[in-house]
Image 1 (tube, helix red, strand yellow):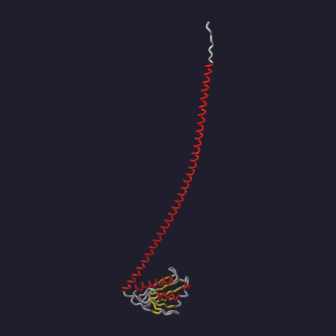
Image 2 (cartoon, one colour):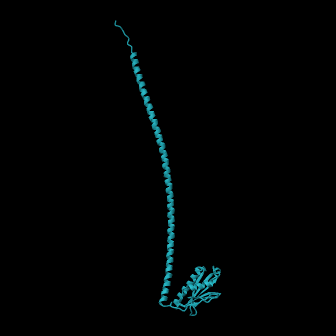
Image 3 (cartoon, one colour):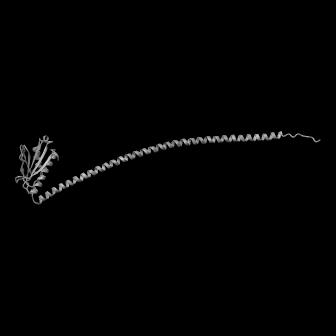
Length: 255
């Protein structure tokens, strides 16, 4: 009878199980270390990303603020530009009106100057200005002055007698008028004035032309003295009944 020996598997099983356990423990330790290192890296990465996001947010806010500031400045510049353009348009319109007014004034001035030059040339051609008579100024309390126009003082009117072919007021005639009107200018301001220019012994066309310029010269003198303006001084021309020198009568009346 052969001997029967019982086979014992436990030692081998225990050894295998121990190896498995040790292997599992080793693997777990490796995983733990790997997990710790990975967690630390992830935490640092998350902190870096959070910082980057925060910095980007701040930079974005700063950029938006700068953008809004630029937009506001752009709006202000546009508003100023529009105001400047509107002002420029107003100035151009005013300049255009002034140019038109100046052109009209210059045209009128040139027309008057042309008329005066034509009259002077015609008078010169006809040798009408060769004689300039010296006359005495006859007025109350006025010394005799020599001039080209005779001044007579009266209660109703001031009369200037012009020699033939003379239509301008020279300095002596103006001085005589000043002497007559001295002390009365204050009371005469605001009064209505009528300047009646009576034609002299010249031909009808020349006499009417001379009468017009005589009345215009007296009217301009009154305006210079502050005794009226274009609305309060009326100039009239009348044909003389007698063949004498031309006369200009000045009358004042209260409105």
